[in-house]
Image (tube, rainbow over all chains, first blue to last red; front, side, top):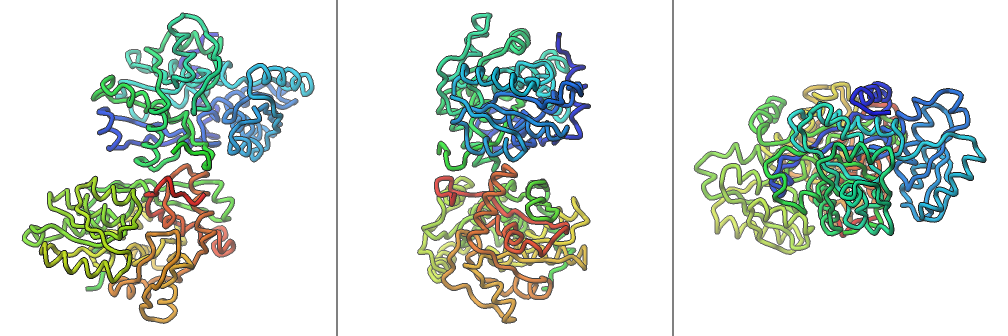
Length: 313
Length: 313
């Protein structure tokens, strides 16, 4: 399957009555600090507090009835889990969510609040996958992978679609990259609408598998990630990497210091709450002050789910 | 002088190109918790991070040229100071701001950032006023009182004007009350546009001078206030109290517990940053769960300037 703009538009039609059309915010102080003109797509205001609801909603609504009888199942460090739980509730089916037991409390609570059923596992990819196999055998529910799934990618691409509708003169678009669902969806949308737009992935230096993969020309799995951006710890997927590789202009890594600085700037200057993973896009501009001078830059603020008693400042 | 809706409309015309038209946000979770339909006017997104810029801007732009040659002067625990500093910068005049030395660091920095000149004083009304007299003698600048000033009141009233334009079916409007500038301006606007609307002031139990004043039929000065809502420590003014007395349906006091709970709900559920004083309006609904059941309630979120390392949660 080759995703194109029409898949994104179909996804939008499917999910539009269930999702928020989130606002695009601007901030003169951040424009001054960055030297660019910034347009922030505020997915921290999305239902469940993150863009992940777009993809989850598209995937669940697109399931054939007989497949969804058993519910849906996924593993997720948090935002996708909550998103899938809420999406499943639209269809009145059960969402089984496998979560590392060290996930942020706010993310655990969210899954439960939306009616999801959590199975905890050790915080390693291997443990997650083993638990997943067991749970699938037990429930017979189809797996909705957090990012390595075309319906998920198509759903995530609707964020950039709205952003470019609201601000059609963007020259650059930056999204954080973890598993690559949002970045791949953004690539399809942005390249489809504006072939010449510059598209960048933003990644913590402490979890730089996407940058290494892009350089190597093949997926380099993430090992021992170490970053506060807990939504960006995963490796690229076989369905996201090729899209990213084909369309992205570059993947830029950001230091922990600049991630935290960007997060604090967004909180203090824009008066909105974003999680560390969402701040990595602005971090790119702090880390590379001359890269986008005077350009119109769209940045997707991916989520706002933070444990308020574990703030880095 | 008797303020009426035309003064608010003139103020709006005067300031509209300098202020942000702030969004009105909604939140289904808070609707569910409160049992009402809530419309939040987000003045935390206003320039300088608080509604105070509306009044300061109106007052400064309305000064006769010869009066403003010496600059402007005020005393303020913070948000009005920053607002006056930015408003003065529009006219390229100096703002002298007298601040209690225990003001929040973020509020001191803001005044300085907008080019204001701070004189520190002890954190008592008496010390403020003495310092003010000295500074006026020294600078000859006219005093722009934080609230006991008709131009300030008219400027603050523009927030409710925008709110009622965006949501003209509101049945209730709630604003925090400190010195009463915002509440008086809201009274003029809301009563002028919708004579039957219910208007409430929201006040911390630990600084309940406005509630006591309304009951007594005269201004009862605030003594020894004790509340986290540091923008609401002041007494009502001779120019704000009569307007409030005539128009307000009641002033409702809120416990510290419900102020903090409301603030946390706004942060976690709406993903926006508000200061404690701004949360007192929602606090009214938490404290009186049955008062506004199923009503359409407008709440002005007054500001978002918080010291992030002194959070109450």
